[in-house]
Length: 201
Image 1 (cartoon, rainbow, N blue to C red):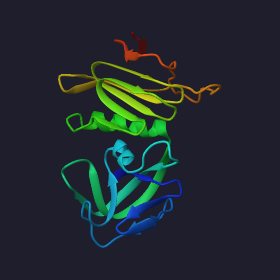
Image 2: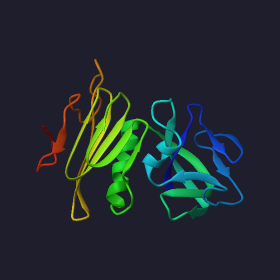
Image 3: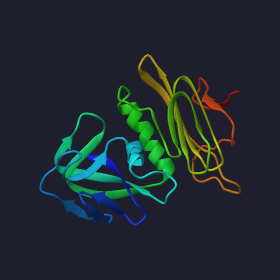
């Protein structure tokens, strides 16, 4: 299965009593898997990576392939496995994209989170610095962010997610890339009936 894992900037992680060095593409194996005890740990929810490897410190995030014996603790999206391979490194916008996909696939799971440079809240959320993430989820959610923030909107009605939108607040002099949707700094946004960004006050 595909999951997500955070690392320090040099692709190391705390594992057991020590530090483990990873390399992209290498298959690592372990004898046993037990959540919070043995095996390689990763998560189905991309934003859970930020609980251990916060934004803003040069930490890195990967899609990983988890295999072998897989153990889930049933409390959150955490996984322990006996085989792991780093598949693809994620930018912060890509991490948020996968977080929105996770919410769509699992709308009833716990999703509200706050942490260093992270705010995922019901109805209203704000990213107050460059590199921060904010996602608002609700019937009429609204979100805003400083220059350099990555934002998400999730429209939910009657327990069903009806629409999502990922967008970026560009930093000074930053040029648009690809098909990314851009917003203005320090401006509240929601989604209109056509699932397009709409400024609100």
